[in-house]
Length: 410
Image 1 (spheres, rainbow, N blue to C red):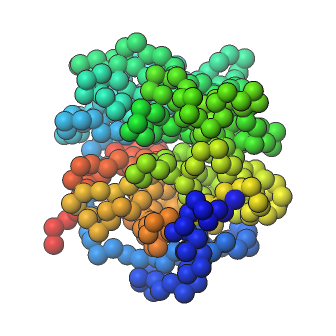
Image 2: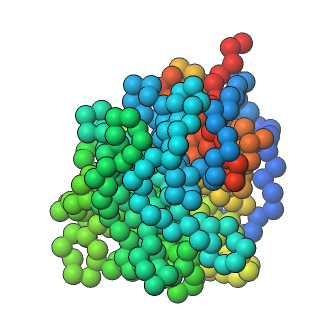
């Protein structure tokens, strides 16, 4: 539910957005036909002014022929990157583009498609060096965990990366979604650290009509954002900790398929897949219900109504922003650094259907402009910021690439 007490800036945006003047009036992108006719709650919640930055990105392919790379994470001390490939491989990519053999010790992953001839959604997904990697060498992964009888679940694990970067040691699961599912779709999943000793893990609801209803069930891990400690313990400050009818690890619920997450200051933001239309950018708060599958700004793929058929109802949180047609978001990051400095504080969101990267400028919790960049690269799954403001991204193809983006002088 939209709550003024929690979003004083957002409340002001609702009142003022109708009279807001776009920074650049002309549109530089064709939005395309909508799937639904649901009106936004306020103007800035949908189709912000489209702009084109006065910069020239320069690109360099660091690595290619990766099989559906899903995540890329920078290591400290300019020690290159870790890259996951969805079939279950973790690799080290040096800053000069040297790509290692697969790193040993990665957990077994589920990587079969849901149906014959389909594209797998399951596999090895996110990777992050731990907050204390410089001393512990701990690496965190999320993946589709096979649990027998044809079932699988989103899981988060951690292990220690050897000094020569050839193997993970002492690997252990720190959280596993329950119940497991026979549906190999909508796993999420990102892992994000809050800087206060916690990790957020995002999940999906496994897609089908029966299982999507579990996004509203506090006794399941479907369609949730999870908060755990770095070793997998559950904080007793979690909003549902100690409740008999809820899982202690749940932070928020009513999500569809959250594949992007980032901290802005102390606040967790996520971007998640909608159905036909209705991809959402959400500011995630503890114990809040984000509405899926009862409300959505999109419709079913068949064209039918989602849940109640309404985009909003009392008791459900409003998205900060939504897209129709969808962008099919991968991960997102907050821009910071000397390169592309006019983007500092903006969100860079990987686009699978949008192609390339979606940039959103923010004023508090209000989206003030949108831009599509690097669209020639097609399906982008993940983006990683570098300290100088340049960034790298991964393209999600059978011959996927890792691309570095810098700002061209002049």
